[in-house]
Amino acid sequence: MPKPIALLLACAALLLALMAPSAAQDYPTRPIRMIIPFPPGGGSDVTGRVVAQALGERLGKQIIVDNRPGAGGVIGSEIAANAPKDGYTLLMVSLAHTVNPWLYDLNGRYDPIKSFTPVAIIAASPVIMVVHPSVEAHSVADLLALAKAEPGKLQYASAGVGSVTHLAGELFKLLAKVDILHVPFKGAGPATIDVMGGHTSLMFGGLLATTPHIRSGKLRALGVGSLTRNAVFPEVPPIAEAGVPGYETINWFGLVAPARTPPAIIERLHREITAVQDLPAVRKQFDADGAMVMRMNPAEFGAYMIADMNKWQRVVKDGGIKPE
Image 1 (tube, rainbow, N blue to C red):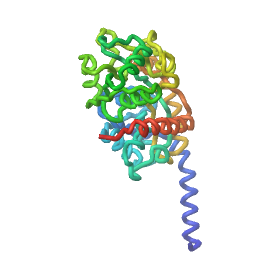
Image 2 (image 1 turned 30 degrees about the vertical axis):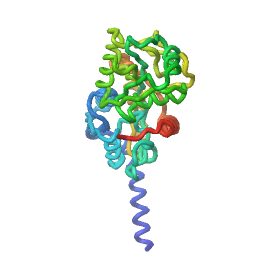
Image 3 (image 1 turned 90 degrees about the vertical axis):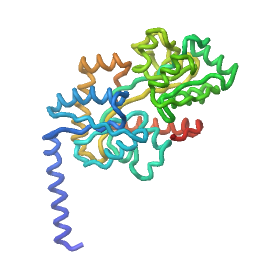
């Protein structure tokens, strides 16, 4: 390379290095886009909008929520991965982010780990195992006895192939070594209605969708997917404690940015999100949704996602799960 060109490139690199801290210090100077790769109304959307409102107030700039649903979150994730690496595009990720590599052929569109920089994990909401009141099971142990007495007779409903409610059921089958038939529906709503109607025996539903029906007596709760009891139903034991050791299915939510976003911006965002998690209004909303605040630094969050990918790879493989 000619010396003048090499010198010019070196000067440009030095100039960029000097400008980066200043740019991070001024950040943000305009609205920030938060891509949510799912339709409005779901857990990612509800959590994202709560955080977007509070985070925008702290940063002094609007956080614009941009729902980009499709292919289980792949479409929105690809858009975020290819966005400018300047801190003005964030992606709301969840358990689906670590499952999709095993369900879909990403074909180089993005890498769930390498294409992003972790910012912060925000909250998690466990699944809850519920049955129709006619099912002769008042505990996880009762349900296991029924499943083992008549393999393949019990059916569990899910929000669709590859959904959290599906994966939760397959993990239960894998760890408990029971045969329960999976019945997929197009969404959590139809699945919940079917169980309430007594057509399907049980489901591993989200707290947001099932809480009103548990309280009305239309569904009976047997166990939660977290390792500890949940504040919404403190009387319901963890499934791991009630008969299936090692069982855990929580749908976690967090924020990532495109890879190589400046570290100073990531640090600022992480600091502000941590403050948002402590706001009384945010805590109140999370409590109402049955969500638990989670805290990790960006490096810990990245390691957590890698561990989650390894966990669900086994479930997808052993369960023979294929996207529809």
